[in-house]
Image (cartoon, rainbow, N blue to C red; front, side, top):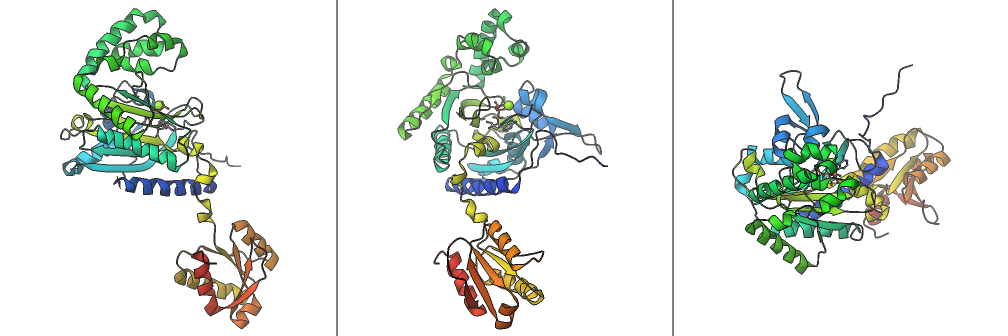
Length: 428
Ligand code: ATP
Ligand code: MG
């Protein structure tokens, strides 16, 4: 017997019940993005490996151990399944000259791939909604992005479930000065550091601040703070952002250890976190990447954005927040007998032509009247339209309510269209 094939570990199928939920959730998200002037962009899932190395940084979790990379067997080019969207988005913006038409507000929704240990909220294929703005230095743009995410939480009734953490990483010069101080400090505590942190000490010491190892918590808490070593311009930028958030009534916590796992960030960084998903608590993460466009070969262009992990976000949602009934048919067409079978197929097409928005499911696979009514009930439809031998002869259709106690009605073929139009419009 042949072995059953399974999906790749950490890469999940999203089955119809969940996929319907996702689609409706995405409708809400798209309407929200349009309200702020964002336009969609779709990038390839595969990009040249050097793009991620240059954008994200060699000494980061993603590039060091999480990328799915392979050699194109035809030409030997090194390729990688995208682990995040910003690098590809910036590549596309440069390649197509979009940065010349700034400001630009872009978004994308799609799969990302990281070779991580699968667990709740952490998968090898997952989905991100990415939002990027090019050409605006902020901090009012940073504030708007944060207000925008706060609005999404309200729309999704999640405002009590998430809190905002904020930090500034300063200019790259301020960061390099701070870096020296940090290396000096951690060198004095070399014995206390774990293996990961020792390895990072000279290559990426800021990442030590981000360590989840509880044994390091104390020396991290006592480490010099980046917030105290900001350059003047970044400090003003950050204070301005904070005051705009204060004015808008957005609550936040300044977290000097928030450094983010990707090298391209500078100045503003933020995360929306929840305590409802265990260790995988970051639902939305973002910040400024003013240097990235230039670093990848484009004209110097300030930029800021965020990414939302959709598996984490949707797992927080109550079933009630998206109107799932949009997927249920209004009506299920029961057809018994040969003549009815043939007539009903044509009737169904005519009804779809003439009743805009009608969701009609036709019975397939035969079955007795009783049997078909059971299927109608299971489909979630509110009405069964019934066609048997008698209806064919009389040119009528029976209408049976599946959810309410009501007498079955019989309508002539010319009456059924207005009846269903009223029904779909909510007038019945
Ligand atoms: P974490 O600290 O959880 O590993 P990260 O800093 O690696 O997150 P980002 O690169 O900032 O994450 O990605 C943005 C968002 O994408 C995260 O906040 C999270 O919601 C989601 N995300 C990241 N990695 C995964 C994954 N492996 N599975 C599911 N969601 C993920
Ligand atoms: Mg990670």
